[in-house]
Image (tube, rainbow, N blue to C red; front, side, top):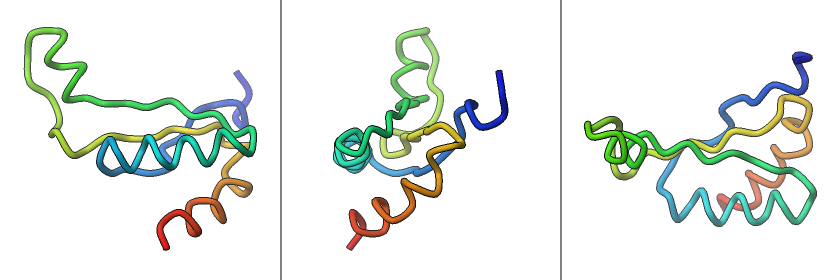
Length: 75
């Protein structure tokens, strides 16, 4: 996989914040992956992460386009 196609951490926050930001990014054709270690750990039978720490990953090539969307979302 080429470097600009790899997924990178873009934002970490609560699940509600991640869902809202992901919706704004998707409207601009930037698609992310939500990584929730707490839920993943529960499904696997052990605890990992915290309830309020969820990560949104996007492709490296979308970072510059996504940055202004994040800034506007946080305001």
